[in-house]
Length: 321
Ligand code: PBG
Image 1 (cartoon, helix red, strand yellow):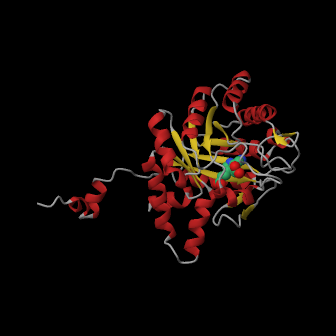
Image 2 (image 1 turned 120 degrees about the vertical axis):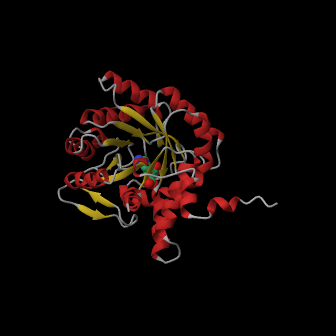
Image 3 (image 1 turned 135 degrees about the horizontal axis):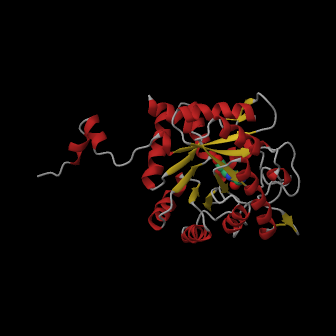
């Protein structure tokens, strides 16, 4: 007798019946880039289908996403000016702060998350302040805490620190609590690798470091045990959810962290992962739509509960049919 697993693949209905993992619009968090000005919706050359939005147009985009069932967005800001310490990152009238208010007033139930980092706001492009030519950890924490409080006060549901400084989750938690923002959550980029897959994002966010690289704070792609340590630390420091980034070359890390933590786990399907699909589709080398859905289901299968992805809108539209 032959054991015949193919019996369960005989028809579309049977396949659907035995499917172990599904992807839905509510699994997605859409990254959005906010720029100064009014009425702006400008294509980002390195991320086909993504745009720089001003505060007014970002609300329209968030509304479309919400209508498609996407429950949350993560905001990135490109400030009107940069300086050495990223002071526009915590300005009350900053683009992100204004975008949070605008989205929450128009779509109050949408979850608004903010990326907390300095790289878009510093003239040197590093994720922290520079002291003696180096990215200084503890000095950076104060600014990250300030930025987080300003996002929380503007109405953000959750802040997402992405800088990879040590001790930032506890520093941010303390600052939020001290300012009466006990209800604001922290989605920590707990395991973030120093990855070349961020290339298209740095173009979009104008955040390429002007000297050196990020290997002194982001993780070495060769390390998995260290990921467990980073994840544990952020859980102990009070993160509400943790994230792994990038997603696709790190599915093993997603799986390992999933086995260890009970917190909701997010994976960031980053800019390079998106851009590669768009470029290869453009050339006619792959079917971009099918590759998109395969990637998303595989990230969930590895153990992610939520996926931050530039595909959010396109995939949500496809799922809706
Ligand atoms: C840092 C940040 C980066 C991304 C998200 N937050 C860039 C970096 O660390 O260089 C990358 C996201 C992507 O590539 O899609 N603020």
